[in-house]
Image (cartoon, rainbow, N blue to C red; front, side):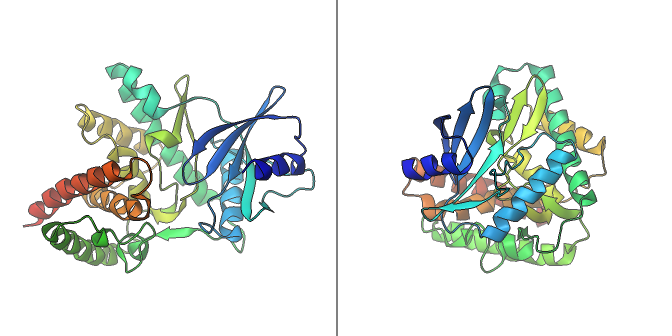
Length: 313
């Protein structure tokens, strides 16, 4: 990987920059420092996104930054390129956003500050959706679809959650029942719920807090989907918090201060979000901590989907 990074620095004209690894998850991300300038260099996971998808992501982020949102924007090479292939890896460079993750910031905040943070989160999410609707994507814009097929179809974007090898027979029966119900429900809903470009991964690690201002990073899974899926994702990691109901209410208030929000199907989308993690972990269970996360994801989904299905009876 060192040769990839060194080559990328030369391509972007930053040979003298200092580089440090900051994240090694879906993509490998490095902080690049050159004088007072700070940038993010991304080496993408191989075979995850096509060039067309990545160029579309970069176009979208550039448009959102231009619209005034605090999101990373692509930094072109001296030749004007925003994406390069180096040793078989797709590489790009983004502007650096300072701040600490919401994961780190939340435990240090008092009740009032936590509530205000979720109000701002709802507001920024609504601004993203609003700006995305106002943006006229060019021909050839390609991103994934978090629709019925992408969530609970035969080949969901994050894997066949009902086929997780760790499921018991009882779990599998419940998960299949939920999948069938969700498929019918989403087919009936169609696009009647607010649908458009969504971040799709607004977890606390992808939200930066900087003196009360929120910034959104990691648009890697962004695409077309239900706006309520973004809301469910932002709330999902907090459903066990003692003040969850208040945080949820404040997020709704923040969102509705910008645009309308129908939350009548929130429980459905929280269960679907839980399902995606059970599918996502299948190919990652052998990674460090994979077994523990797999167990946790299955337990969370079991709890949510059991409660959801009981309410239907």
